[in-house]
Length: 324
Image 1 (cartoon, rainbow, N blue to C red):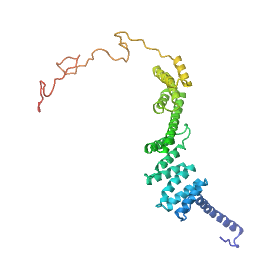
Image 2 (image 1 turned 180 degrees about the vertical axis):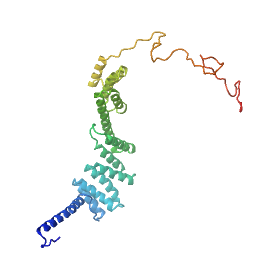
Image 3 (image 1 turned 45 degrees about the vertical axis):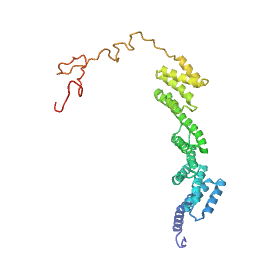
Image 4 (image 1 turned 120 degrees about the vertical axis):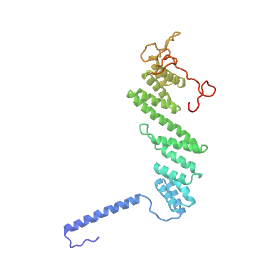
């Protein structure tokens, strides 16, 4: 843009400022375009795939993934398009862009569910979730998604080489979920919420008993049962702990707790003695139950017993017929 020389100096300064202001958005758009998707340049499938593979070998994983996506975009019906889809998911995984990797693998399975690379696509999805697992203090939604994906892989392809690795990772994921339950249970214990804490420790025993957190969970159950006033259940938890993990510090602690709070056996009842003395508040009544007589009820067996109705129907002394 040419600025006339006849303009006053102030007008020329304003024009220069205006030109600079207009140039900034254009530069920003150009920068975003350069950092976004690749511009569409028509190339043959061989050149695109070879270039993407070269970028992958060079460790430029994000560029490789974009080029593999370009193969699918420009040549969707080529035999290389299917391979490019799974390679794109793999490249995104190496670039640690797990969301894009999972999306690309899911798209591959939606289009080619019976392809020979389908087990690997399921494996990439599971790895994408598994690599995002955080510590037990965070929300465990990703952890459960990883467990579901690993289970899906093992259920569909149990005899593949990916299934053996999935089994190991499932054990680690279960251990992580058990650790989350223990973390919450210990938090409830510090607040004196013994029943809530007991429920968390029971979950570890019921659902994750093969994990490394089981000995501590049994010891914590002993603690919480004693605090809840159920020493018999505490003794059972300590006995299970001693039977399965006799040499651990958790059993030593549980044993000491039971020594300090021994279970007092109840004295046996004498012949004819009832567990709850008669007349105790809240105790059930003893003896025959008297049914009050309904007003207007005459005859019958009296108020102290229940009259048995006469049989009705075939074989009875009284038969009912319509209108009687």
